[in-house]
Length: 581
Image 1 (cartoon, rainbow, N blue to C red):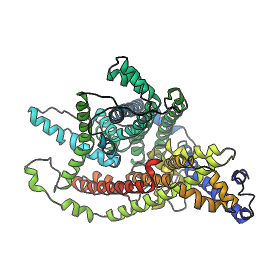
Image 2 (tube, rainbow, N blue to C red):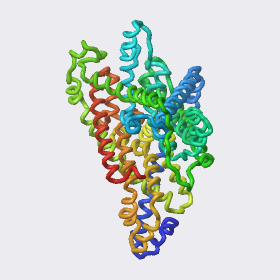
Image 3 (cartoon, one colour):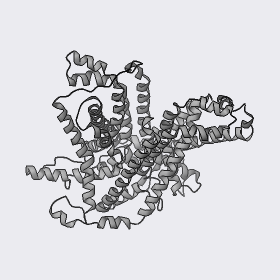
Image 4 (tube, rainbow, N blue to C red):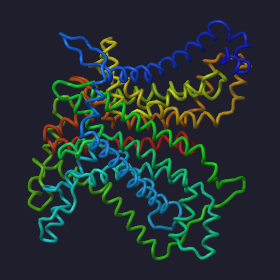
């Protein structure tokens, strides 16, 4: 009843009694029940399975602590924990340093080429993580890596200059891929910062490095800390880099251990669940710290009612060094990885770029991948899943956001928490929990494309909530009250008033979910089956089969398609005003 009363007149209107009232409650109750099922039930099955023995034809499953004993009594567990933290912390620090430096150069200095900073810096986000990792294997492998071969030729030595198959190599590859996240977060912080304190420091004789270190970064501390925690969580749940670079040389982290526990023979789901719960606990602690930092952000407020004009720092001749740093990042994070994929895709078999290898240039790999089994089906599956998941996520979270922001229902904060819960759950852990859930409850969903759709919706609900919340807070409730006073039902008001006004956030969130759905591998790797493959699984299988040139050709086509989609998204953003949200 509180929801009906909150609508300021809807419940009092004769048109809002009977079926209109029931449809309002049915839609909202259905959305809340759906998100509760998606987020809470699989997590419950994951925890339950971690305490159960494997079920066989001769012996039923029974309660046990053996899975945790096996997981944490081994001396290798300490190494596993150490590797996971070292990889996540190293990646987070490296990505934060690169992203923050680029953001500072872009927003606070007169570095040349600033106009292309934003577009170039976020390009790596378009490239699927598995393709980015594969490209760096071709660049930094000790034996066939292009960088090593070029440097060995220059210095006439057999020394390995860079090694992708090492902890430092894993950190650099993942850090370069995640640096755009830090760039986007820090750009927003620097852009809204009042420069008066920096100007005062400059007038007091402080140097540019002193101003950046003692003034700018300290004022941006909440954004720095939040960016670090987000990067840490994204890194510790990363699957592609540990699987492709760590497993071949025995460097295991929690995500690769979960994958191996599932794919060993016989499969040990209980052990995988025990590892998954530890990983879930680590990410939960990271989210808690992030929320604590965000709650203290008012200590660092510099934007007040007094207007200010953003000013940039004149770097003098040092601005050319800053431009060189940006060009170096663009070279290693964008141009070189894409070049090596294009080169590989034009070879009959992979060979290092050279004049002699130019004789082997061919389009055979593209012809082969077009006729490769399951490719057309995987492309269609990814297309359907990305469109369907993005549409369902944005519409459902629009309803949930309305409940959270427009009603006074007791416990409505639980709805927001439930919808945000998947943000804490690593992709591989989410896939494992969904697998266990639907293997247990049955229903014929496991092994079909529907389970992938459920996984994608669950994984990306938090992003839909963030986009819709940003737009919903800008809509004054008097528009809905006016519609109610005119006799409109809740459904009519929501469809004709709320959703059209949410359009910028809806479209922006929809575009984002489409892109990340197509890239998604970590939750898909445990849920796909023959006939339900997606493009990321095809890339994974090509790598497993050693078909590197076909993989490269498929990757080039996928990146080109995502790039075109991004251009269309930019056109849509100008059409619907997404940039203003």
